[in-house]
Picture 1: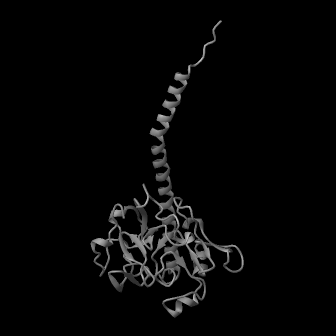
Picture 2 (picture 1 turned 135 degrees about the vertical axis):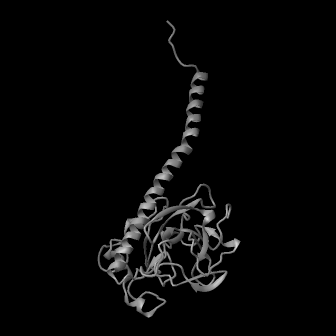
Picture 3 (picture 1 turned 90 degrees about the vertical axis):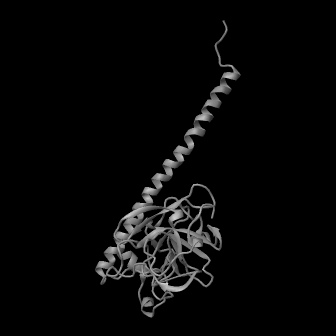
Length: 264
C-alpha cells in the first residue's frame, strides 16, 4: 500500500504561509509591547512626581534639586558641586531615599546607595546607577526640580520655568520627562551609563517618536517629538540637547531650530 505524505511543494507552501503570518503579526506585537512599556514608563514618572511632592510638603514646599541646579539627569551626595553654597550642605541622595526614590544598600555610595527602580524607563537598556567617576547618582529620566536658569545656544541665561518650590511652581510646568536627549550631535552619544540607548521611545533610528512627561499637578501626557523644544542644557558648549514640552517657556521664544523635527 502507498503511504500518504506531504509533498515537498506542500511543505514549502506551509512554510511560506507561516512566514507570511509572522511578518504580518510581528509589527503588531512589537507595537503592543512598546505601548505596554509606555504605560509603565508613565506610571514610573507619576510615582516620582508624587514622591517629590510629598518631600516638598514636608520641607517648606522646597523640592529636591537636580545636580548643580542644571544637570537634569543626576543628583548630588553631600558636598557635591553646587550652584549655591547651601546646596552642598545637603545630601540630596539621602533626601531621595527619604521618599523611596533611592535605596540605601550600606555605608557610602559606591554601588551601595542605588536609585529606586522607578527611575528606570522600561524601554531603555541602561539602568539608573551610581557613577563613582562623577560622584553622582544618574537617572534615566529628566528631572527639572530646582533648575534656576535655562541655558541653551540661543540664550545665555534666563529665569527657568521649572519647579523650584511648590509655592511658585505652575501646575503645567514639567517635573519629569523621558530623556529625549542628543549628546554631541548623536542620539545615545557619550558614555553609555548616562546617555546610552537614548531616546527611549522610538519607531526608527536615529530620530525619536516622542516621550512621556508628568507635570507639577501630577497629570501626565505622551508628547510627540515635533511638539518638544530644546529648552535647556548644561556645560560650556551646550552639547547635550535636552528636549521636552512645556507651554509656558517664560522669556524663551524658541526659534525653529529648537523644535524637534523628523529625521533630526
